[in-house]
Length: 113
Length: 111
Image (cartoon, rainbow over all chains, first blue to last red; front, side, top):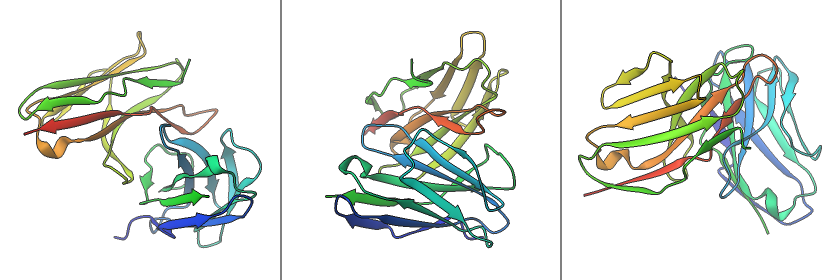
């Protein structure tokens, strides 16, 4: 069974640009979670999507946004990139509803120069 | 006070040693507790859940003390392959529905 996949693996952007990160959940999973792991910081919860709706959001500014598609894949958009947005962005998926049984993808490493 | 606090380490131990990691959490309403393992530049992977009664999985033993809001992980007979960062993770359930991660404790097992 395929795990959570994320693309791209690496992304390099300049300050002020927009970044789009993609995530495909495990087949049968309908919830997708996004986390940010910046250097020296723990994983920080960003967003939770379930059945196409945003269910919860962490303490991040509105320029972090996303969506979930009918096939349950998800996209994270970061607008007006800042240097401190450089981080590993991890996506996780779970079965429907809020669940602590989350399976993580390999992440997208975003570098903002 | 941070929600989940861990000693960042690093813990440098010889092969075969026993090592213990501790973690404290601030939200007394937290419902579920876990240890994850994260290898360098990789995604975190669930190592084990933590229960008040304590639980063991091979060389790994986890313990939860709800009264003290304290979680521990004990690794016996350390192997080189145990070298990783160990993340203490708390699930807050109703209200926030999110996993809250500690910053992790880095373990290096030395030959």
